[in-house]
Image 1 (cartoon, rainbow, N blue to C red):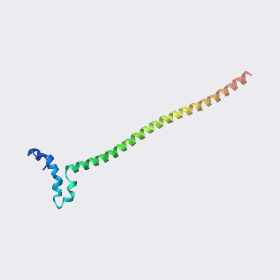
Image 2 (cartoon, rainbow, N blue to C red; image 1 turned 135 degrees about the vertical axis):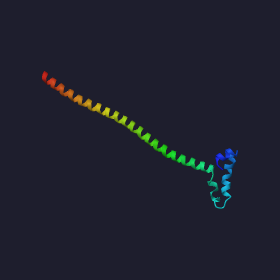
Image 3 (spheres, rainbow, N blue to C red; image 1 turned 90 degrees about the vertical axis):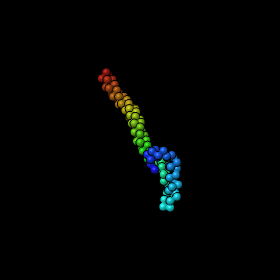
Image 4 (spheres, rainbow, N blue to C red; image 1 turned 90 degrees about the horizontal axis):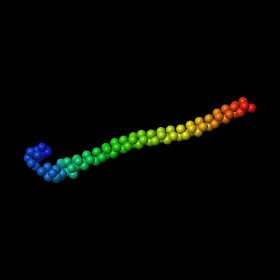
Length: 110
């Protein structure tokens, strides 16, 4: 019986769904499938598969997001380190230039 038949004949679909495993279990050819058949078992299987799929997909998306954010953070840290290093290097070079110019000026004045 499908859902449209149940609606047309005013049948309690919940009661019908509860009898599906018993119906399969009572037949010799399908008895071993009794606990695996029916809407309830299908819902459980689908739920399990969806959870598995989502955990894989979400995990992949999270990994990508984490990598993206880490690269941004690392890039920012590298920029700060480069700026710091450059300021030290530039300061040292400026000192050397100033000393050189001062020595030239002092020599010229003497």
